[in-house]
Length: 207
Image (cartoon, rainbow, N blue to C red; front, side):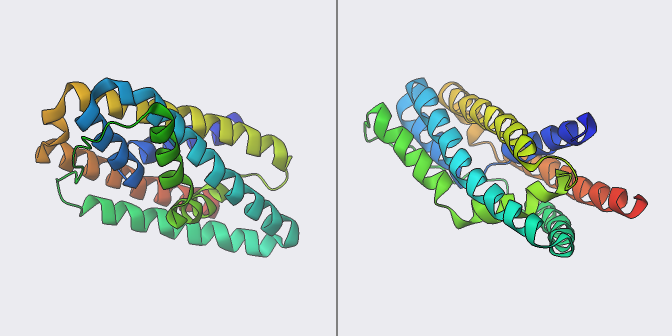
């Protein structure tokens, strides 16, 4: 695995994580209702959930890679289209973040478990990773090494992103309810996603 592949994966992951999804909505809901104390347990639950979904996805990808190089290549092509579709959908999304404050006081372990369940058991998470990860894998390099590096990178970013959202939501609540701010995040993320998909397609065509 080259440094360029890792850097591209890191950049794309950072873009994707910043985009508000079901997990971030849950993090923001707890933070709006209960403040900064929710940040660490929620971030930990998100990281554990992503670890679960990502590991299951990587194991499936590894099986496909071992079975057929053609199927793996086809998966990468489909994944590129999926990234572009996600970008277009995100760009057209509205400017509201539908996260209602959770006033029910929950212990840290329950918040962590809730974040883990929402992240890990969402079928879209596994589908996303199956479409996303192959774009950066080198089928000629050691698969286990790539799996460990990509998982460690993504989980570090996921933890930091969830922690940041929780802190911002607890301290700058008006920002989380500002349609202009959310619209800007959606449009920027959507544009970058489409760009990442097109760049991936262009690099594949050049090889």
